[in-house]
Image (cartoon, rainbow, N blue to C red):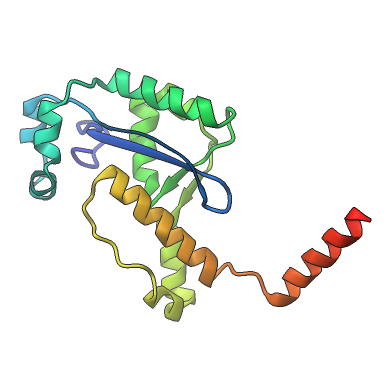
Length: 185
């Protein structure tokens, strides 16, 4: 995004990866740079100018031929191929910010998704407060602030929390096996 102000900023890059509930990747979707006018790029905050300039995103936006409408169509087509309507939640780090922009600028895409979100940042904050030892072991991020990189880092981070905080106890696993065995007889 060119910033966080939903009234003046715009989406400039989108990517999508669909996973199952065990965080196995089912499909990697479009990774698109969205054309925006130079005036919008020149009006970005200093943080955005620095980071998007350094990553090459600003120039990629200038060079892009993809409109916001075309991007919405491609993403909607992709998620429709892989998920039934209303079942797939939007997920990522601080994804509430993405949701605000997607609700405004890509309503058809958002209509296909589930209304709930999975915000990895919330789990990060809870981990930092309640499980500080596990928090210290969170995989290091490159912080490129590019869409696809951010998604992969969010998946990796969520896998860490699942393995280290949301882990099943040996006792619970044995009960699952026992119940499963009794159901198959």
